[in-house]
Image (tube, rainbow, N blue to C red; front, side):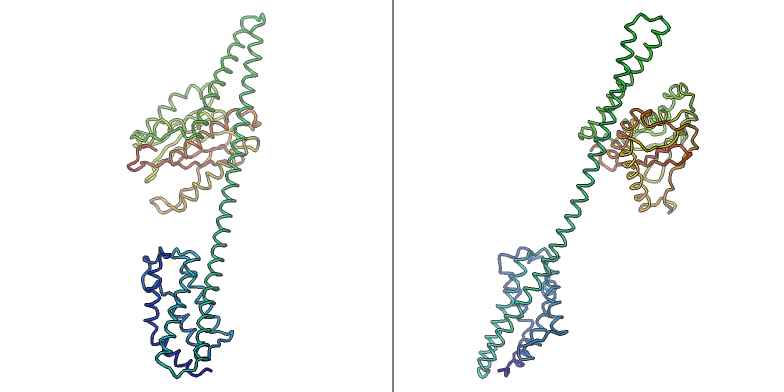
Length: 431
């Protein structure tokens, strides 16, 4: 029964290139293969020569191939063929149809051999037909199994990505809800002050006391107005209504003018306000939004600081420039602002990671921002009304301007906010 099979194996070996060419032509003529034209001949053949080697070895062994190294190599070649087709963009159906075309080409080659060797026993050709069928069937199984494993692996990776994205979204929603809860608490407290003060002013009070309560009422209304404006700013930023308007301006002039305009506010709290940086710092950016970031950070520093003061620094760094606001306050404390703290911590870690990947011109990563010694006593979180809203605005404005935001604080030290801005935005003037 095995007579003629070794000759058939030699025949297939001699006809290897003709078989591969016929298989290539058959697949190319199949309308199911949209990705076929993108493969070179070598890419198309990939591991199939090793598969044909295994078939010829099977025929030399009278059509049988025991489960050993040769058998395992055959399966490995078939699985690697499935991996290659996955990487080239084939779908599972196309991969299976390729094996069908290969089987048809091999069967036609058996017919050619039988016609050229009429003395070969029919039983031997039947064995050869079964060997080809089993061989190509195993190829379909191994390629498909590997393809399915790749699909499952990709699906698991997508699931993990979706789970991570969902967790991040839920965390953002929790932080947003906490921010609005704190804003509502601040609004209620401010409205309560205004309401109680108004009721007192309706009484028959002596003039010095009436003037005192009138000043309290004025400050309450001003605080309420500022808080409402901040809430509108947050809502506009979250809704995507803010746009980046880029133009050339001198950042040093803008920051120096801001500090000059706020020296009275610092003096009212018996605080110093220092402005340090180069006399000129030409950049391209959104001047109004940079000013809002600096102003919010400065107001936040005033609120947190009862003794000492605030220092504002600016400097150029290669393709970026930095704004730092340092205070001698008590530093961040745990409390209702914890979600914002986490967001700022994440922003700081991301900024440090980006700096590590893009070292400055000296070839060294930028060190953390220095902090000033604290000179202010600890205050409970509820005493820092409105602080979270202002920092939320800063964080979202930084995202809009492609700027990184870092915060550094330590026990016994104040807090330093550092914002790193691009010095230009290429050809894009608005986004």
